[in-house]
Image (tube, rainbow, N blue to C red; front, side):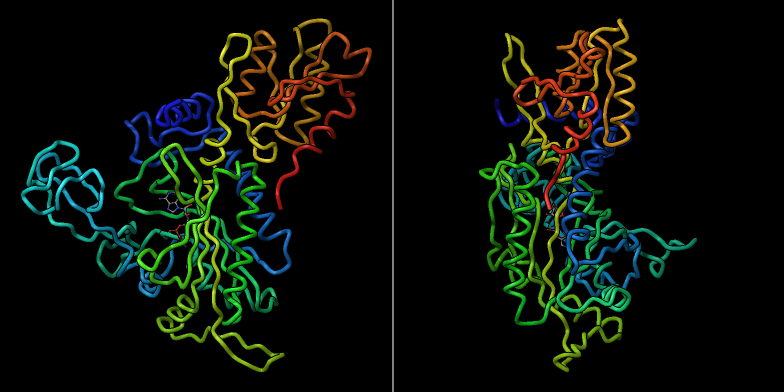
Length: 446
Ligand code: GAP
């Protein structure tokens, strides 16, 4: 399959099966903003829950936080976003399209007569590049004036830095310790695209780990290792994951060292998570701009210092897309094409489909009772319409790992058939055991 075809097929499956819809579709859609349907919201929630479990619940040294999206405007001056969170933008005076100045499709130098617009093909119509800040602005209160400007946060990290002392004191943690947060972020990207890969509204899963200066390089390496293991644990193909180290020209203004975890998408190797050694840049800047001391006092060593920060920053939407891309496959089965999402059971939106083989002989009653029983433990789906093969296929496309069929033997033998999505093999399991059977196979990563 051509790479573009894979993405087209995935986008169409996501709409058909209720994973992802275009935002405001009945009005023609809103550029690079997406809504998650019934299956998509479960998939993304599973990603976030697994991240939270690995980062917060399974550890003693990380606390959770849910900071507000709206923050004091000085935060974004201190962070460097007001001055520097910009991309160079060029306009085509002829067709009115906008591009990043470094868009590889542009021929020639923007602003010069030889430059050619990649959309309408006109020459000499591209403007000189001008810096365009990616933060969305809005106004606080009833007056729309400069003094009332605030921003939708472009990253969740700053909510953690400004709360670091609150969390430290209220949780009685000691350094080294971390703060984790999941939440929405907004960027007015000039060239968003590739479905939910780069969007204007997205969710980040960020963790900031506060360490003693001098121990940062060591912690940085540990976090690199742990984060890659987490992605392996989601069931992603290891051969499609790699590290990308930021060279000196790529490093963000705050970073002493940075590595991206990249995945091989149909549109190339791209970042899904960044691990950054941010030194004392963030706390130093907030200390300077707020005038509040943010130093840590180490009682045992009787010393005071500004902690360094090791950050892990992943996109929940990007991880969800990665899982979908990695899971999508087509197979020939008995002369028909079977579309399967081979999702790890821990992230699959529905864990089990429950089917009465036929709508008679008491099978629907038995199947309904089993379905209600299972649904109390994990998401399950009841389907009694159409041939059993069709019902299995519908669940294959939704990524459901187990199909449970109530048949003519169920009542007497007190057993059902469990059909495995990937191998399509079937086995007999007791009605009273099938809940435990499925639950035992849902364990995720820590
Ligand atoms: N606090 C550091 C930070 O925000 P980043 O590399 O700009 O670093 C971190 O973003 C992660 O957030 C990325 O690896 C990606 O998964 C996700 N992300 C960033 N911009 C995004 C966008 N426009 N759409 C979807 N996800 C995005």
